[in-house]
Amino acid sequence: MRAAAKQPDVIIVGAGPAGSSVATFLARAGVSCLLLERHHFPRDKVCGDGLTPQALYWLEQLGCADAVLELTDCCIKACDLYINGKYVFSGRFPEHTPYPPFCTLLDRKRLDHLLVQNAVAHGATLLEGVHVRNVVREEDGISVEATVAGSTQHFHAKLLVGADGAGSVVSRFLGNSFQGLTKAVSVRAYYEGVKAERSLVRVYFNEEFFPGYAWIFLDDHGHANVGLGCVCDGTFPLRINVKEAFQAFVAQDLGDVLAKGKLAGGVTGGWAAYCRPAARCAERVLLVGDAANSGDPLNGGGIHKAFESGALAAGFLRQVLTEGDFSAGSMARYDQVLEKYWGVDWQSAELLLTIAKNPHFRLLYLQLLEHLGELTRHDPRFADFASGIFTGMVPQSWYLSPLALLSAFPRNPQAWLSLVTGNDGTRAARSAVAAARGVIAGLRSLLAHPAGNLAWALEVGAKSLDLGWALTAQSMNSIGTLPQQFGWPTASFAPGAEARFNPVARRTTWQ
Ligand SMILES: Cc1cc2nc3c(=O)[nH]c(=O)nc-3n(C[C@H](O)[C@H](O)[C@H](O)COP(=O)(O)OP(=O)(O)OC[C@H]3O[C@@H](n4cnc5c(N)ncnc54)[C@H](O)[C@@H]3O)c2cc1C
Image (cartoon, rainbow, N blue to C red):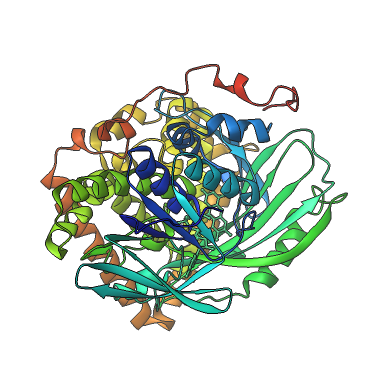
């Protein structure tokens, strides 16, 4: 696209959702910025292609929600949950949050292209086919060394943003290492010609690949995005071959759904880390999106987090440019911005992931999930609370707030009774057997791997203390990852926003 005319104020490495959103917010405010992207658009990115309600909200703030809704007709209001192949419940997206109560699907080839075009339309400069290899700090600025059509070129600016995703070159420059991080290793494939009555989002928690989940996201036209991701770290390395687990999952759990579908393209892999990097900023540099490990540790969603971090980073960079102080001390305030906005919520979600990532207790965790599912089925208020926490549509630290828990507590006696009786009156007996199996399996693994389990217990303890400290440092009422706390509007997606989906392509089969 356009060539860079003069030295920009900000160079952004990577033009995914994070890079494009920083560029859009900066360029809209009149800051000159240069986006460097190693690929040429339109390009694919391994992803589930799910645009969460929060992503739709941020697309609105970026000025391209209508353009996205023009490309898709999926308006999905609930997520169906399966455990060990068995349907458990459908959790709807809660109403009365700053976000629309639905999600949609759009492949990343089109989404990312649209986002980068939006950034350019706002005044950012994009250079494609520029593979950044190295970062060099200079006396009066910062530069990157890149390979462009086989030769080496340098680009200079006052400030640098690392938006180059998982495995970021800029993150490495800050001294971060990718060894042993808590991450989800995933594979994804597309299917076409899938027979379904409606678009849907299904999530599968199975013993074979827990901690982690598999999914099928299906649009109204029979295009399905199917994937499986498994969580691992240095203590609990991958215990399965993710591609083989994916193939087994497709055969076992999706045999019916995909019966008429055809694999389109190959099965491709990706990963993202879900832990705080050692450094997210330094003199003249900061990280956004997956480069900053910003994805939601509970559900793995990272597109809306990339937008959020783009908005936060752009606001911060504008302030720094006005002040003219790019020292390490000045840039360190970016960490405080992230902490203020994400801090306790992100930590609360991370604590749950830390607890869940021990595969030795997976049978117990799945039992617990099944029971939570049963409670949500009988109590809509509790259902909204649980799905709000899982999707991050309400502050995720609310699961630790006595007030929030009290108001969401299932009051319907039927809900509690169902835990004992289930559909056929035998749930209590089956649950007791399953729980006993879970405890025995957990204890056996505990004894077989004492060092790993001790390290895990210490990690859970340390993170709990850290979170407890952070929570007591601020009032429970003032915390929360909600846009209005950063001065963004609350209700840009008014009720009835569904009508904005492309009416020509829209069907009447919404859930
Ligand atoms: C299998 C899978 C499924 C997922 N499903 C979902 C989902 O359904 N919904 C959701 O919200 N999130 C999902 N995520 C997470 C989501 O994909 C990421 O959080 C999101 O893409 C992060 O955006 P980003 O801009 O930070 O990074 P990326 O999207 O990775 O973009 C980084 C960009 O930087 C470019 N780049 C990288 N290195 C260089 C370099 N050296 N020089 C120049 N350019 C460079 C890349 O080409 C790319 O364009 C999924 C992730 C995976 C792995």
